[in-house]
Length: 231
Image (cartoon, rainbow, N blue to C red; front, side):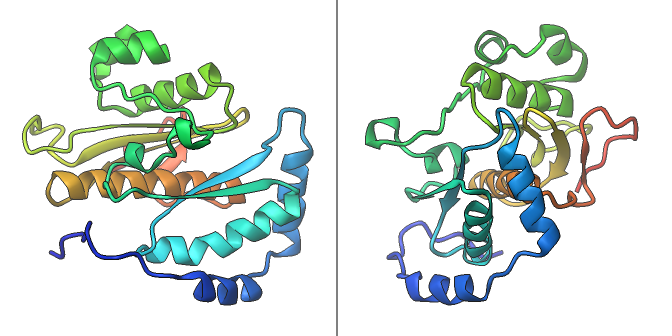
């Protein structure tokens, strides 16, 4: 399994991105959808992208996010990750002018106190569950007055797993004012690789919500009565 390189120099992808942007096109339905969304009371005002120069997902999706921002008259902000594989490390430093609120809530009491996660949900289902991830996403969104909230709770290892929830089990949720999506995944690899895969899955969920496209097969609307799906 290839290890993720955290030390290689950054590459200038500006020419490639300009070329991709020139060829990026939205369908009429996509354009109409993002304009409708932006026009709603309390609708989104900006799109924030956390980018890394060696990510093919980043190079593929940023030009389309730019087109979405244009179509909806939204601000697009792009932040470059600082080299750590944690999603939280990729968020901009507020002291440097960033605008993304962040809560790191490893302890269950912090999840309850800082994000409003119901204690009985943790007691019944455990901290690594879709219900808790959804509550975390709701909590960070509402308490920071954000347009989109993301909740990620999992077992990155090397210890902490169980037969029911082995190492690599991660629950993810995205919350907006009108929609919630949840997902339970099982990632493979060492601790940093599990955290990296979780961060990318969370960002992909946000991208799909903002673009108004359907979720991946493992993702479903919150409250869906079907059994837990894990990938």
